[in-house]
Amino acid sequence: PEKHRMLLLDGAAPYDEVGRGVEFTSRIFLAWLLYDIFHVFALYPKLGTWDTIAHHLAFIACSVLACSFRMLPFAFCWLIAGEASTPFLNLRWFLINTGNGDTLAMKITNITFALSFFAARVVLYGIGLFDLLTHRGIILSSPQIPSLVSKSLLVLIVAGYLLNLMWMRNIANMAMGKGRRSKKKAT
Figure 1 (cartoon, rainbow, N blue to C red):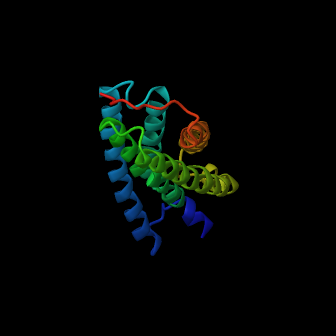
Figure 2 (figure 1 turned 90 degrees about the horizontal axis):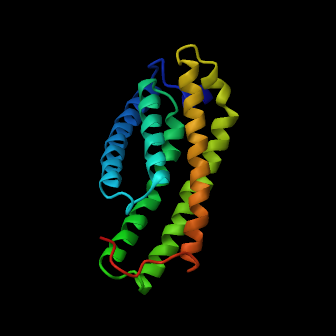
């Protein structure tokens, strides 16, 4: 079972069907990442700066590599679960852009965003990363996957977690009212 949590190369049932589902969902996620990074570039730096771009590029690379080699289906599940915080980030952006950046709704949104980010992108991602690193030998020793691909994926996933930790500090400060606040409309 550990092997099939890391690799889906052999097409063996029932894992092949799971692999196809992960690949399909990964392609949808990849399309969304590509759309979103163009959106970030078009409105740079209003939607994000180097860190947002690095985050998108890293996960675009992870998605392409993992999907191409049909690997890390379990990791994909906990990585995509990190998007649970995105609706609250989008709601926050909406409130700012409609002139509601200093309302009770914004305070509640900031707290909800911080809690969902912490749960999904710090706790769940951290548990998943621990599991991935514990079983890293499976992908590092696979003869079907080039060493550079396996190592690159591990480095990118660890870097993504470190970026989430950096963001968490800023998000927590914002939720507690300690960060900079935008009361005006962001154009």
